[in-house]
Length: 84
Image 1: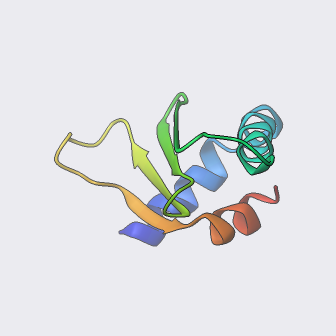
Image 2 (image 1 turned 135 degrees about the vertical axis):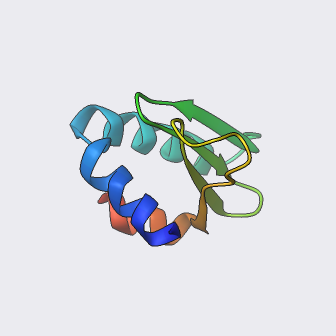
Image 3 (image 1 turned 180 degrees about the vertical axis):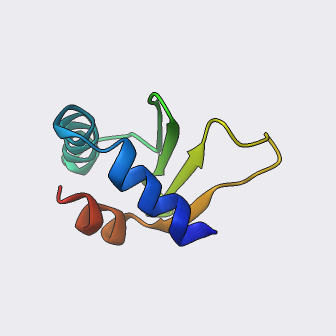
């Protein structure tokens, strides 16, 4: 299910606007002296949580029950898949 959820996010949610929001947040967190630990984004169909300390991204389908934890991937893999 995890890869299917990620594939749905990439196909259904990730457009130029979403990609730019994520790109800017990642760039901001990578600046020296940045103290950003976690950023959360609520898009139309998916929520995205980026944990910069652990270098992990969690993608959750907002239409699935709250008990569904979504899919967790490395920040590097997320950046690659999203073309950021």
